[in-house]
Image (cartoon, rainbow, N blue to C red; front, side):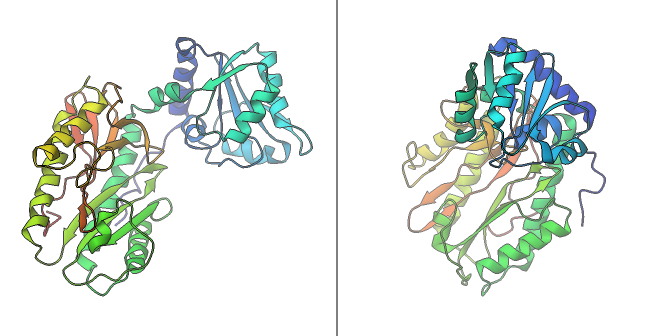
Length: 381
């Protein structure tokens, strides 16, 4: 069942190229340095999968150098995890690590510094007190670099999404009335693990009947009743890259209102894909989906019955990352960008329908990673 055994990982050379593009882009963003902290950006540039803790770990990147600031007792772990040698400044437990960062900046005369947007406020606050540099967010710069995926990244994303679609299909063939939500979630996690995902399901939302009208579900452990609508939203990671696919289906005949709105959801999803053309603003995709729904009396805007959230999000090392398919995001669509397409319809107190697949931009326009759902009753071809 595994779809991941033949995949090529991100190489040290590719990460070095990413780092070079970051360094070459700093001047145009009026930055002398960028501080990257543990999380997706650290993994993107260095392959380091650490998470932020109270002990500051960061990479200070300037146009000509990379310096890691790290606790001294973590020296062997850090050096073993990095695929390329870097300069390091170590700090001991009784020392203030923000002062170590301030010294690195001062020695390089680095006065305009961009901070990883995922860095916690507490650590940013400590850095701002310790340094004389002007600290701003490096979010726009980092998003511009990470937004367009390489061929290797696209292959990892494809593997994750193909695996999750396979898990959805196996779940559809297995699910039956009388099962608890928790049983379905456990089954999906098992199938993701068996298929070669990094760590089973990254997340899993299973909703039945009226519960489908809540975009991310509600607490509890309901039992699937005969005739109820089923919504399953789940994903995994492969090599750190995410899937996130939703299917809404029924095992038994539904009334005409559910059938008509399911068809409308599919129409809105198709309209969003058609609007995703190279050079068009991301927000135009959201507008296209909403226009379909509004023509049928839903909305407008985020009003319910209708679409309560954006049409889609970027995806990669973060499950939700910029740019976004939402009003006001004027980022031009470019080759290599990857997005979810999920213009959910919510009828409060009754039901909800979300069909979510992902597409990536090619030189010819958008292309699906996974085939959209076939029908309400036969979700897989």
